Length: 410
Image (spheres, rainbow, N blue to C red):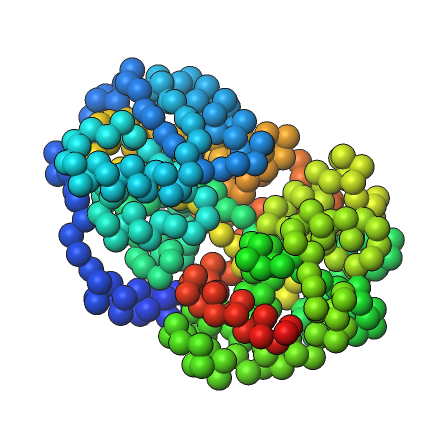
């Protein structure tokens, strides 16, 4: 089912209004900082230090965040950015402790969260805002129609969190064995039935497996319909009857008849490399290229987008409520949202993380730091991914979809 973006946006606006109408509250704000013009914010941040925590673990991400990013920020803003890893849980617990003990300066100025987990920070009033309207790069380069820029985890972000980067579900085939990628889930079913025992997914809660299930349901039922569902299992079951029929139909044709699943993306890669299954899967559009570079994939490997769109995730930046350098944090966020830094991050040789900003609303020259990156044929370009992207499914609905999947698989 092809979704209409304008209709999708209207539905989301209504959905957000319903949620925020019931749960809206004042979250801590700093009128002194917010009332300053951008030039004054930059001036007060000059030659200061900003401490940033992130929860990324992949080596390329860590290298970029802890080495490349601070050097770039120092060069362009003069700010000494100190970046280190801390788990989302540890960051959350520290801020809760700061709040309970009324610590006015907790020592953290900026948080970068990858994956689900933003909502508790907002609900517990652990983050500062709104502030995004003051950032020139947010205003200039974030698409105002982007759902993910304004909405996450069933709530309106209200300018309290800025997007940092994006990932998206992709599949990979070996074109030496399969000439044409399946265009939709009907064609995928034809492949699955024709090649019995040669299709599987990483076992949820592995993120790749979960995003396959979400993508399947959203393509069959429509993203709008899925995201409007109440968090009630029976209601979800009734609403996605066609998807349940699809899963039931595919089960006997799965690898090991759907009785077991590879525990990880790595195990699925091994099955794909050994030609035991037709497709590999990833949340990294450059995964096939990286595997080819390491001689871990067959030479014919290339990634593709299945159906009308695949589900993606977004990482977000937040400023703690008790940051001692809110101006500095805002200047760093603004720099991160520049085409130059997003282009560095998108470069497959540096990291390959999808940009948070939208090249479609930029002039050609302005977008060049992003669009000039060479993307191998085995990967998928940012522009193609953005044209085929579905926003993340609410976690409470996603959890129910996974439960239904396991009930069908037995």
